[in-house]
Image 1: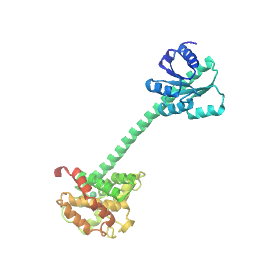
Image 2: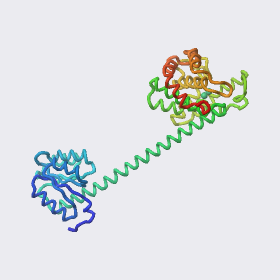
Image 3: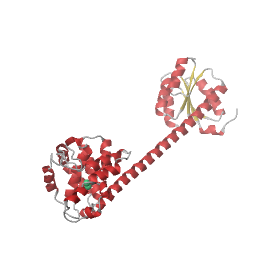
Image 4: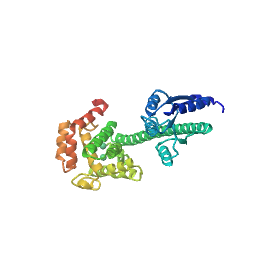
Length: 353
Ligand SMILES: [Fe+2]
Ligand SMILES: [Fe+2]
């Protein structure tokens, strides 16, 4: 039998209460190029496993203090990258199956032939190497998928946000409006008790609420002063245009965006537009967006009007309780004013910071 140089890299721990067996195995394996350590029982073995970097454990089953089976359980649990071969004086099928099920790489019956031992050790080490490579490969794959998913999520978020901003820019709104509005929406959805994933989706989709303004002519959209009745009717088409832009989308975020675009001007008492929906027949995302959109419009500077104080805005919104706004949602929004004001401060327009 030739000494294999790569074997030197492998340390083997031989565990047997019979010193003579340990010595025989050790001599044989050292001759094959391995480095060997010996332990007289499971407990001693565990101590050595903590001190050295072993590749393989050869363990007897019946030993004092800690049996080979118990040692096997410990090794599988604490040193999962170790190969374990069990060696027993009893040819018991059930014990052998039990060992393999627990994670042993092999089960050899005493007396052990010289070749049999060396072949079993080499095979176990080979299998161990393949399993380590496989595990690392899977780990790398997992990390790669996670990184790609993060990239995709970021791209999706940026795309939605940019689309939302594009629509708001046409209306002389600031870019920060979409950002504040989406944070208010998330906060309100969360406080209302929607699931974490729904809240996140609402945050992601709400910047699209005014996407339909892309389809409204500049002469009306940017007209200074009061709109005529006819012009106002045209402006009122933006929810439906927004819905039509997004309605065929397959992704959850864009579909939710379609719903928000369509329903953010509906009013709780049925006097809103475009469909005069009423009460809770207006989807929750639309009722949430209505509150957050109006609050932000009231409390920030626009080209055509100055911001009003938060207290005054609250007063105006309370007047709309049950009329414009879902009363339950409005109460929740107003009860969380500290968080709302925090968002308002953190996402303020540059000139207001
Ligand atoms: Fe709107
Ligand atoms: Fe808006």
